[in-house]
Image (cartoon, rainbow, N blue to C red; front, side, top):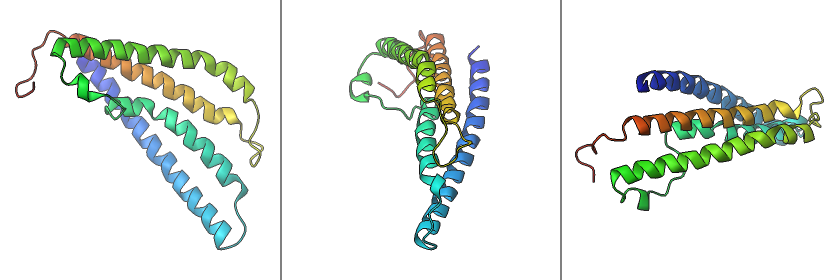
Length: 167
C-alpha cells in the first residue's frame, strides 16, 4: 500500500512542480515587463501589480502540500528529535491530525469567502478573483492528501525499529 501511495505522490508532486515552475516563470517575466514598462518607457502595465499579488497569494497556499511532501514546512525539532521513536510517531500522527482538521475547516469557509470575493479584477475586467481562489482550494485539498499519505506511512512503519545510527 505504501508503494502505491509513493507512486501516486511522486506523480502528483511532479505535475505540481512543473506547474509551479511555469507559473513562477510567468510571474518573473510579467514583473520584469512591468518594471521595464514603468521605468524605461514611463508607461506601466496596469495589470501586473494586481495579477501578480493575487498569484503570489494563491501560489503560497497552492504550495502548502508541495512543502509538506518535501518536509519543508516549519517543525519544532529541538523537542521532537529527543523523544523516543514510538512517541515521536504518535506526536507526528496527532500533529498531522490537527493540520488536517485546520485545513478542512479552512476548506469549509472557502465557499463563503469565494462568494464574498465574487468580482473581477480592476485592471483585467475579464479575469475573476475566484480563478486565484480556486488554487487556494486545490492547495488545501492537496495538503490534506499529502498529510493523509504521511499518516499512512507513519502507521505502516509504527512498529519498525529505529534505523541504525540514529538516537
